[in-house]
Length: 500
Image 1: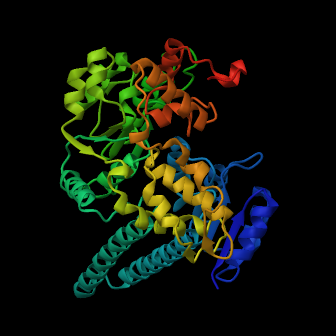
Image 2: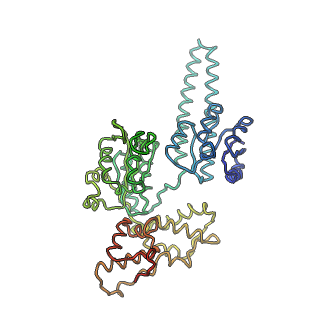
Image 3: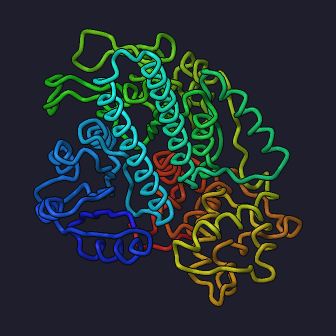
């Protein structure tokens, strides 16, 4: 069996790895870089896997140090951190074959190890062939026919290597099943048809839709179906980066350009050069930074903080928002010219309530996705479960459905997905009253106040974050707080007083 070495400072990780992969390979383990060096002096390996974060020395440092001495061994970096600069450094300096994020999927990791072994064997075959050709050429310089045949063989081998490289890229790109878009409705087939057509161009795409509808999956699909699919896909959540840092994150800076800029920084647009950048929550981009984004869209260039020269990039921009940008333009928080540049090809991602025929397919998909990870063998669904799922309006869209299915898997027994005893609390069935029995007419402010209190109660008075009232109401947390003050709604969590 092929010999592999796994280096990790956590003993439990070594034990689990050895138990899982010993049936496929001859597995050696080391608890430190120093222990691994001693093993390398005595043993040879096809593949070395190393954890990035270890006391005293990173996996990247270990690979850089040992590359010259063991160039024939393929290297795979295992990391729980996906900081893009660390990954680029690992690829460029330590010449890793691939990087794997923790927690890893066993099947995916095995496929990557197998591809690394295949690549190593192919490269060594190539080196042996080149060496043989060089030795032969010394004694057969005058035999032109032989040299022509040898050159043809080299060309054939080069083409084989190129095809193998492309095959490996294609195989590795299939490993991430989380990007799968599940649908069956004719309406969503139209969305995907439009997406495939625009993906073949370089036009800017604006994805619109409620929170939780899967806008990021559509953005990845645009990249995957485009001619840039073998290049970088860089995701940016514009709402998650502090306003005073977002310009540096997007466009980079030079050392000394501001307090704390102790090194040069490459921006995300530069990292996405020749690839695709996904600007999620683009409606939250600070107004003062919007002209700089507009310049990139129009001219393909920008200026880093502290730099006097412009940087040219070729980047395909896909943006997404759950805000109504028309309203933001009227409020003066979003530029109309930027909106028109982003809105070249809008894709409207419908809410789950508008395509409930997808629910059975999504249910099956999420059961498969989470059952293995949760170590549950779900083989069937209890009677009535699907009816309950179809009856609910899913204000949190596909994300809410996925979270619900995951919770249901955790609580289910005997291989049957069941929701008995807690579906009413989840689906808030008590909030629906027959309209014909509700004849009370109240002022608009009072109706809004009652509805906001009802949503806050359902969310246990959590305002911000995932599952919070702001997300449920599809408004910004600051807007919700402002409405609560205006309507006289006292925060039950902080005041400790019940609201009538």
